[in-house]
Image (cartoon, rainbow, N blue to C red; front, side):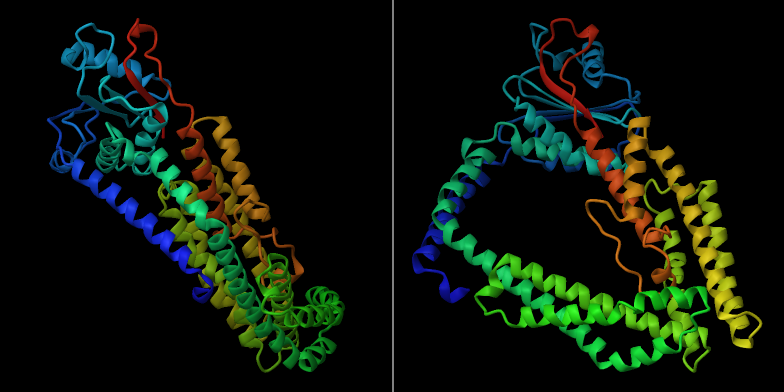
Length: 489
């Protein structure tokens, strides 16, 4: 790629970087005014003044600005704007303009309601920013506020406010985007094309290598796989289902061979095209599933017939369950994980009992007091029980985090999509085990899928809360029209 970038492309990039550097250098010099005053009214009692005051006093504004911080414990139904105005009228009339209609010049108020979970920003007319920028300031604090890091969240919001209040035109996002876009348009046609082609080619080679590794394993073990399949007892419930999968094994192997021939027949130029990257990925996925299936066929034969490697095969069947048990504490320790709940206690009790059961089943398999099928039945029952416990804990987590039925419904949908593998951000992959082959991928609710659904659910609800900002000052505000707004977190 380096050889194909034209000299004029490099020159344009250098010019662009140099111009931006001069502009940003001038802006950095202008960002050098600490707050003219800092007033903290922590009526909620959630801020660490020893951390907050030194941090805010070091924040640099473009113009001398008085920073006021106000917290109080309200409710989700409150209008934070109305409360801030009420408090200012009663306790800090100097925060309001002489005509009583605006916020005082030179003022920036950062307000927080940790109980009602609202955050607000308010400015004098000479410090006001756009509604979108007020949202930006509030959003800068929300990840920390959602995690109950009240002091750090407040500092983050004030810091973002300092970056936007009285921002010089050449520091604005609109100007920088326009400048970079204009200059970038001169090089985008060549540079973007080269980058996409290069990244596509790299992806093609990566997927091809993945496919080749798995395809080589399958090809090398092909005769052994056929031999293993021929001795699997068809009378076994597990054995018969695995044999059903094996009956299509050879045709799928031939299809993977055809894909391999197509992929390896492409020229270097063709490797840079996106449809061919998809072809390489299809080849890699097909070979990976075949490689996993031939391992399952081998394990099924070894375990059901108690072959010489039955213990190793059994360990591989236990591996997904052991991984789930090891991950239980992690999901319970998450923020909003409801680790002290009754359903959490049930999960911990199940984990401890199951770890003992695994040792007991293995010993019974070893001395012949239970059959391999019975051992697999017990493992299936245990994983089914874990699925039900995780579903119950999901209800607990949803009840603890959601504020209303709409949020609960959103979280519930994300959890269900994670289990079924239909979510936007993940897909359920084939589990290379006997149970994973016999039962559909959504049959067991695992700890990783619980965690995925939990994370996506919390993120979706938090994002929904972040929207719908409030700009009015309620019934008691009268004709007051100061610049400010609030939103939930």
